[in-house]
Image 1 (cartoon, one colour):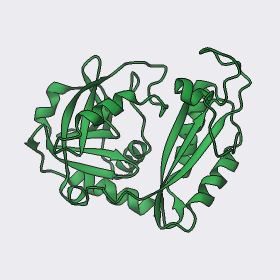
Image 2: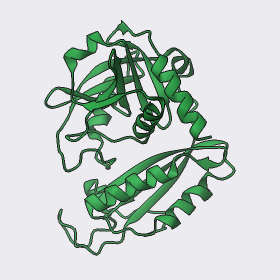
Image 3: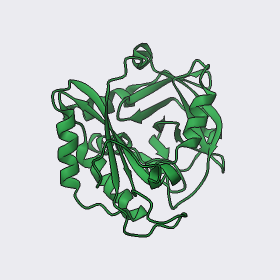
Length: 267
């Protein structure tokens, strides 16, 4: 894997979005849930047939980059590498490129909203359905870019995105959970969407607490009947939704309990 400080214009990540990325939060000089991030990366490499084997060395690099930083975010980008031939088809002997970047913890994070809950609406931008890429955190994020651009001047912290078939999939940069009288449910991601690390942690914490979680298709028509909803990612953790399409959601018991369980399991 290349360790240069420059990226060639012929890199397939730049040319075709041919690669994966992980966003890793670090607290007290340690990357959080690193094993889960690397397992997702390993699974993505297998599905995209990216040739990378030395995950132990990658873990050491990430851990070293996090050291001596109280709170930071590390972004890892892994591409197939420098194109060995022109065109979409890989030659098969490319050397992967990895890019590690450390960022300060965002100071613009909406602290007040994180205490009171997020304001969320449904985006007009829809996600294309492709089972071959569903669940992966691949480099093709233009749909999310458009969704975020459309909410630039709106008083919102996040938007929910629907599939091209009209089902709820998740937030533009988060997964989403809903609650009804039967328990929790979260959208299935076998057609599109990203299988988030915090989504996995929430499901595991709910299982420990005896809270049933259904993974299933979610229709837009179900949203007006919800009593609780929250979005998740590794930076926000478990973030309650206070308003969904302008309608107040007051119950946050699941979000509080799951956040407590996750924080107790991982410092």
